[in-house]
Image (cartoon, rainbow, N blue to C red):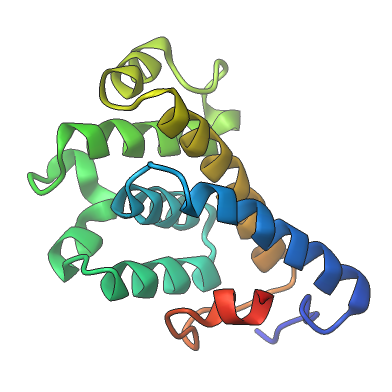
Length: 161
């Protein structure tokens, strides 16, 4: 499968992607733990089948000190013992918020309550924005067949500066 279109070379999509990355900066600068940001981004990307984003968020997580064991278990987090209750709440939120067509109500009241137990309002705002952003990013990459495997940590930030 060849990449269909380079979103970073076309002036219209490049301008959009730069602004899109700028929106992500607000999330990265929030108090939502970086580990949670990467785990949520990775899980949504796994669900959406986005190789580019899986590659990016796995490598960024490793660069941030995340362990291979935890990253390998993200797809099976419910059957794993390596995630905190706060991380489990965020992962449940990521799954329900990504699989909107599978759940008539989106994020369940139970999951929302668990998220509220572990995160303050600013962190929840960042979590909601992050999930919307990563799902949009997954769609961009999947639409143009942007494949995973070549990402290097910090590459996206460098391209957007």
